Amino acid sequence: MADLLPEHPEFLWRNPDPKKSYDAVIVGGGGHGLATAYFLAKNHGMTNIAILEKGWLAGGNMARNTTIIRSNYLWDESAAIYEHALKLWEILPEELEYDFLFSQRGVMNLAHTLGDVRESMRRVGANKLNGVDAEWLDPQQVKELCPILNINDNIRYPVMGATYQPRAGIAKHDHVAWAFARKCDELGVDIIQNCEVTGFVKDGNRVTGVKTNRGTINTEKVGLCAAGHSSVLAEMAGFRLPIQSHPLQALVSELHEPVHPTVVMSNHVHVYVSQAHKGELVMGAGVDSYNGYGQRGSFHVIEHQMAAAVELFPIFARAHVLRTWGGIVDTTLDASPIVGTTPVENMFVNCGWGTGGFKGTPAAGLTFAHTIATGTPHELNKPFALERFETGALIDEHGAAAVAH
Amino acid sequence: MLLISCPNCGSRDETEFHYGGQAHVAYPENPNELNDREWAEFLFYRDNTKGAFAERWLHSTGCRQWFNMLRDTVTYDIQAVYPMGAARPDKSAPAPESGTASTAPDSTTTGTAAPSIAATSTATSTAPASATAPEGATK
Image 1 (cartoon, rainbow over the protein chains, first blue to last red):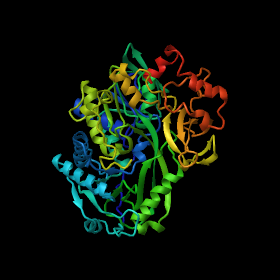
Image 2 (cartoon, helix red, strand yellow; image 1 turned 90 degrees about the vertical axis):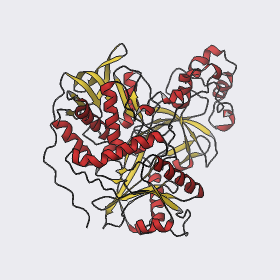
Image 3 (tube, rainbow over the protein chains, first blue to last red; image 1 turned 45 degrees about the vertical axis):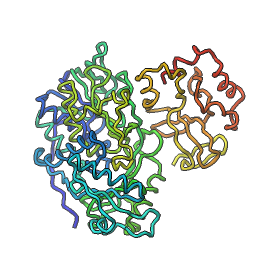
Image 4 (spheres, each protein chain N blue to C red; image 1 turned 180 degrees about the horizontal axis):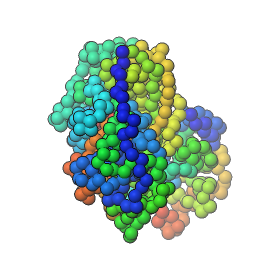
């Protein structure tokens, strides 16, 4: 049988009205905003802070991702921040006193061409040098770990092997948000829902307040954690971001008995699949090509990922799609996030996590909180500054990082 | 699935097209004079408009010609399709494109291109620098 989910307390956080002023305001009540507020309060003693969420808590990408957590990125900078995130994921259930069902069932990234094989082996080597657990599996080992995968050569792109990260896995994204929210609330953070930011108050080039549909709130510092809407907020504040917002779709099947023991990602035929704790198959693939804020995409993108899934997992052919949805992801041209200062004084930005923000949640929160509290970047997010687009020190994870964009 | 009206081929499924991002981004007039900030703007910074957005599309499995489209990025409604080199139809002030490689062959690429529009795209190459440089150089 599928896992039973834990019971939750009836109330996990208050719903306070906004105060006149705060020491810091976080815009965006998703995973990253919540994690940032948590670490601001816990690590930096900043408890007179608020999270402003225009909708309901964790109702954006935090509720729409496919919950995959891994750290097998190619470049040193990425491996460092994502591996730190993974180490935090491993201790957070205890620290937050909330079991969000982090299941380290491993993630497999399939190789389907000779190019894939070479790139994968290179990444396994790079991962090992960076202390990230990684191994190369031949097709037989792939089959042993995930018996429902088709490793025959009767398909267009047969499986030629895979990289495997045993410590990777999935977690219940809603529970993660609630875990952070409850701790934030306990630490005194105001979580203010239905509070949309409509502008900023500035004194010269320094931000001093946030205009919202619930009045103006004065604040010393502002941290933007708005994912797909980061550009909209930046425009209000008077600066630009190298971000393009795209729809990213995912889907689930109806519930099934456990058949899929790990997480399988394929860049080449392009789908990623896991089976959630309750039993539904969860799938995602690439973004819709056009810019979009509509939280929906085109159906042919779903069709494409289904075709890929059925080719790799013939057993899925008779499963039914129960639900599809879309989120708005904030992509950068080097497929790496932006965490740091902005051209506006006392305003900080955490964005550009694109299609892979969920896994980075704890590290985004930790490093962004450090940046907001001290005004300078944490060692881990220093390379992810906005300035890299000027200096040329890009962290080009497109295709390099087992990223299924 | 968007249903896109190619100016040459008529209404076709989105799967026949390739997305080209923001329209009206001209190659810098004086590339040698750009500083790092300006190159960053040209290479990595594009508008990310929530609302009416002018963008380029290529009918890659049809006539293989580029064209511009005005589309709402929230509702995904297509508001206008217009030729390369033409000004954005919802803006009163024309935004001449200069130096873009894609503007020149317009007269042969679009069935709807009016002669005056074709004239605009070629005229810019001989227009005084002051008329086009400030915007073109930094976009």
